[in-house]
Length: 217
Figure 1 (tube, helix red, strand yellow):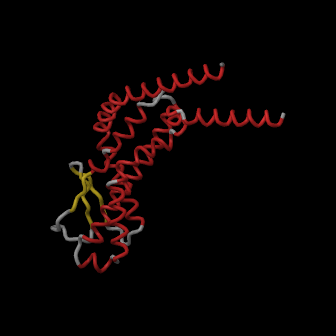
Figure 2 (cartoon, rainbow, N blue to C red):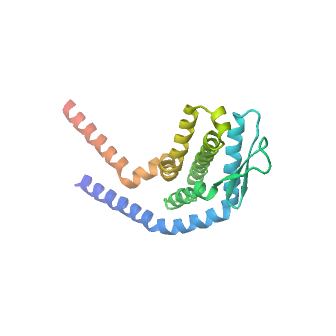
Figure 3 (spheres, rainbow, N blue to C red):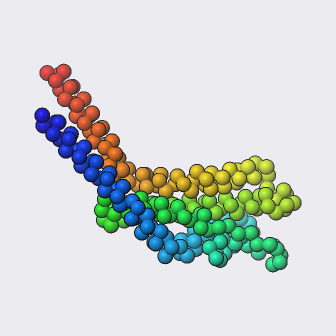
């Protein structure tokens, strides 16, 4: 009897937590869009700066510069002619998934608690790294395939395939899946609790322990 009551109470709490999350989500999505628009210049600058640092770390001589203008990262090389056409990458397409991460975080219970803010900061850092890698693969793919004979001379077929695959992966599946994976990864206990998985596992363990005690008796 007591077990049945506890199970019913747990299911009610779980259902309520899930409903609260779903009700919050549209509002937190709007809030996330506003935050992203306000922080967009800083996010784009940080992403381009990190991508440039990663590129130049394995580049000799260090000639690549990524300049953000009008929400696009311009790919500039100091060893190219100044009248050369400047290739650019849309920073909006790279950084828009910040909205998804923020909306998911803000919809969780107690989003402004110290623990959740720390998790948000760490998750945002990981997302920024993934965005920088996305931009890096765009730049390296351009170097490997978009500069004619220069690309053929300095990049092998293997390099072109690797950078092309990296660009494809971080463009399509990466941009859409990374926010969800980061959110779940840093909030595993909260998300699993909302889904009732932790509670079900605890119930199974308690039942197994009870059966074991009875068999020993």
